[in-house]
Structure formats: structure tokens, C-alpha cells
Image (cartoon, rainbow, N blue to C red; front, side):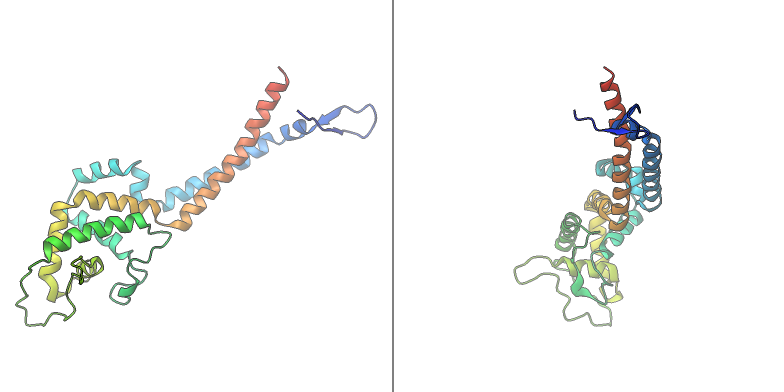
Length: 230
């Protein structure tokens, strides 16, 4: 180990001071500042982290807990909250923006949402009788493309908009999801919450990283001091 020496008073008889000695005087200061950064990160997490992330450590734990308190309202609320985030704008104003992946809406969450909507489309819209309502349905109300695949964006738009003329369609879709895919909705919601609020997550990560680095320095200094005295 290389040891650099500095002079305390500049005189020839002055006791040499090592870099380790100088850093040793800063241990408490670095410890204090590191704890401040950790505290800021903890405060940001407590304020901005979704409730499900603060309450449950894993998606499996969340699914079990939510399943025990499973209600139709809870399932619909979770699906609606995640579904609306699939569009950058409002679904009825900018339908073409569906599926634009952002840093707060991951590809994994979109895949899970599409799987739920595809199941609902196959089981709720196929061979659906036409509404007897006096209003005429939209001419472009088909939910299958030319290859026979469910267009999940239209399924979700129908569920979210809940237009009166399509009442039977979105009501059936919600019923299918509640009966068959409730656990998938809860799992998707946890996945979505884990990646949401990118700015806040990044801020917390920065605070914890800086705090960890500052706290590591006093630990290393103490370790060197102990080793040097052996």
C-alpha cells in the first residue's frame, strides 16, 4: 500500500500526516451527509411510491392479498387505471397513440394488458347480437382484423368509453375479465406500478446511490485503520 505524507507545520520535526488520517477526520461528516441523502430518498419513496409497492414486496404477495378482497369494482378500477395509461393522450381524442411505450409504461405491462383484452375480445364480442337501441352503431365497430386477431385497442376503447350504443359489448367484456382474469389484472397492476412515475423512481435511485457511496467511504476508512494497526 502506498502511503503519502503531508507535513503538519512545514517544519522538519513535524509529525507526518497520511491521507488516511485526513480522511479519518471526515468520517463523521461523510456519514452525516450520506444519511441525509438516504433520508431524502426514503421521504421521496414514502410520498410518491404507489401504495401497492409500499405495501407488498412481490407481485405474488399482492395478487394473494387483492384476491382475498376481490370485488368487481376493484378489478374494474385497476383495469381502467392501467388501460388509460396505454394512451399518451385521451383515448377518444387520440386513438392512434395506443401502445406508445413510455418509460412509465413498460413493454411487459403492455403485453399483459393485451393478453387480458384479447381474452375478453374472444369471449365477449364473438357472435354478439346487434343492439336493439334506436341509435345506429359505428360502422367501424369490428373488433377483429383481417387475420382474425382481436384488435385490443378497440376492445379497451369500448370498455373505457362505455358508449351507450355499445353497452352490451363493454358490459360483457368486463364480465369476462372479472370472472376469468381477475388475478391477471392484479398482477398487471403491480407490474405497472413498479415502473410508473419514472422521474420519482430515478430521483430515489440517485439519492440512495449517493448516500450509499458516502456511507461506504467511512466504512472503508475504518477498515483500513483497523488493518493498519494489525
